[in-house]
Image (cartoon, rainbow, N blue to C red; front, top):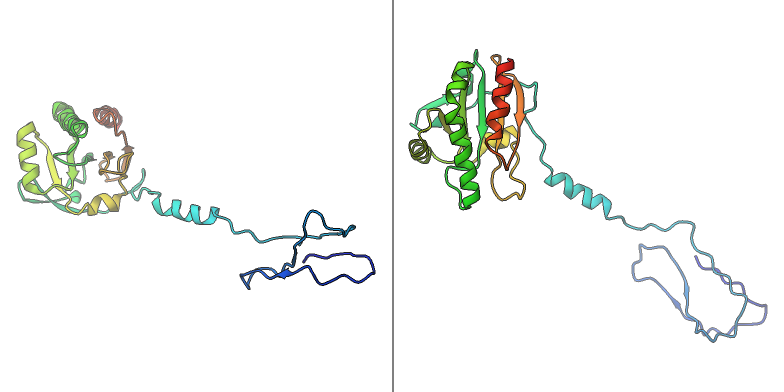
Length: 225
C-alpha cells in the first residue's frame, strides 16, 4: 500500500488513482506525478513482500518429464521377457539361467545415417569376431533392436552373425529396461548389460560413439566372474 504524507493544506484531487487490472493482485495505489510537481516531502512505502511467480518450478517439472531413469540397475535381476529371434522362434531370457548372458541393445539393423550404420556394423562385427571368447567364458550373446525377424535374418546373414538377434517391435523391452536414446534423442541408443549365472546384472555399459568398446568392457567382466 502506498502512503502519502502531505502538508495540512488541502490538496486538489488532481492525482488519479489507478487500480490494477488483476483483481487478485495486491491493492496498490499508484500516484501519477510529473517531474515538475510542486508537492514536496512525499513519502512512499512499499509492501514488505511481493509475490513474484517463479519459473523455476515449471522448468524443473518439465526437466523431470524429459529425464530418463534406468529401470534396470546393477545388482538387480530383471524380469524375463519372450521375443522372436531372426528365425521366428520364441526365445525367453529365463532360458539362459545358469550361464552368463550379454544383452546388448542397438539402434537398428539399418540406419538412415551412414555414421550410425557404420557404428551398428562395427558393434555387431566386434561381437562376431570375439564370439569364440564369449563361448570360452560360457556366455551367451543376445542383440536386441526394434526390427522385425525378417530384417534380423537379413542382417545376421549379411554380417555372418553367429549369435541370437531378438525382435523388440515397439521397443517395449527397451522401455521397460530404461535404455536411453542417443545423445541427440533422435534414435534408440546402444547399451550393454552383462548378467551373471543367477541372472543378476553385473555391468551396464553405455558408449554411443565407440561401439567396439562394449565388447572390451564386457569381456573384462566375464573373465572376472
